[in-house]
Length: 332
Image (cartoon, rainbow, N blue to C red; front, side, top):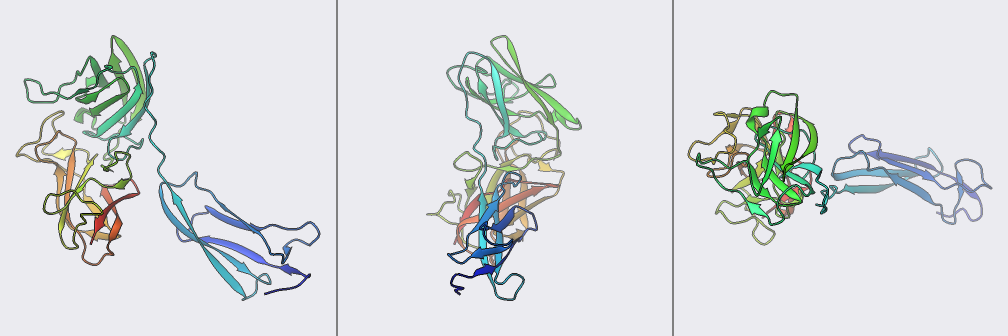
């Protein structure tokens, strides 16, 4: 379409598939023309996408242009916005004891804390200079002191899975269940460092990922026990194992710091899994066998009616809380 040197009145509108107002568009107007008119040299339209209030994920919308304005002569331009998860705070090093973040160990996101949840605490000078892995006490449970470091939840010592000067991996005690909030502090070398108060929630599911960053390829095993990957996808109709944390209170009652044996714990809240957009029936949801309390496992059948690919999205819902976006598995 050409109008030579004549101005053209155009209409610009934006829409999103989720109904949210993250997408806007407007024409760039020349001061020599009236409002709504632009010269065809060619016309320029500014498109704005506001991602600051959106959780990580992929969003779709469209910018619709009509010329003349409000006519049936329209063109729709699709718009796709991908919001990546913010990288977790980087560990710091220094002499001042400081806690910089308390994150779900699976999703690497800050959220409410559920009983038994595996957590990662970042900071500086909060543990030993030489990293130490967890040990079991005489009672067969994970010890609460590691390399001189300790973490307290409302004065309750929490089992420690890993300790270094910049990172502590800890299990939230089941004893915080029923509290509105829990106050967390880190102790090392006689110094107590407050991490803050965090709301206690019924569940806080976070899927573990291979990159440990909370997004990308999930920590998933195929039916034969091999690691799921782009080079080793799961067949449709096969059973996979998904590892996560944050299932909340269990039945039988979870024991803080125990090693799960032949007596698996299952969440009291309903659990659902979505694979490739399809809701799937669970074969099992509960504690991972022979693992530390707080590490959870789902066994689910890969739907036969989903599309194959290397980035098939997976979500877990426990009660009213859903796991993070941008976690996937490979399906063939």
